[in-house]
Amino acid sequence: MAAIEKELKDTYPDWRLALAEWARQTGASTAPPWTVLHTQQRNLKGQKFEFLEDGSIVSRGYGPPREQNDFFVDLGSIDSLTPNGSPVSAVRLELLNHPELPRGGPGRSAYGASSLSEFKLAYVDPNGKEQSLPIASATANLGVDREPIDEQFADRRSKAEERTEGPIEDTIDGDLKAAWTTDTDAWRRNQPCEAVFVLKTPWAVPRSGRLIFKLNQSHGGKYGDQRHTNVAGRFRFSVTAADGPTADPLPAAVRAFVSRDPED
Picture 1: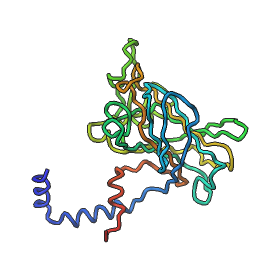
Picture 2: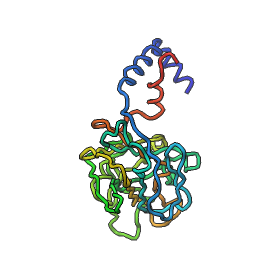
Picture 3: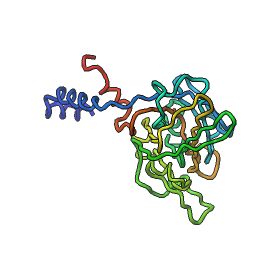
Picture 4: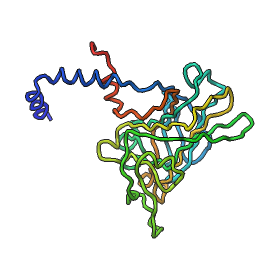
């Protein structure tokens, strides 16, 4: 590695200036402001969750092969979801690393990856009536072309395993057989990543009730053990009022680098 770095520096003697200019141009395209939400678990199932101070959620204990988990934020307990109470335009799902996850995560599969079969949003009013919040589009900064589910998770009981793993769009198509996977390659699958879901209509946030986040993860194997689980390990929800946001194409570490003060 040292030899490669030396060769590059010798080939491009002005590399410092070029890097600074690239960082300046890239940093100019800032990500929209996001409000991190501190959620609670809605449905109690096999997984146990630890809710951290930064708003992220860590999956612990039993690693299910397939599961539906719902989380909520109590709207009556916070002043506003967005600055000035503007309507929510999109939701961000971050998948984050954690030292106790396989290979650092951010997933719980043996490779530290995960698959998300379907993502939905809903509002539940104080009387318990649930209203779906339709999603228009989804983007992610990690993903693969659609392909058959990994052999590790294939259902050998079925002669026709129809589940597939692929791009983020597969989480909003209403088809539980298709999923978004973070299992891209040996390096990127263990990096933090994010997905952004844009609502069909900006949502004027009520002063009471609950905003519900629904994660369906149906792309694990047959048995409930570490070898067959394929669920998210650490994740976090945020909202924004920005117009047409998309997933940040830059990895979190690179975004932090280009966002620094040039004088630092």
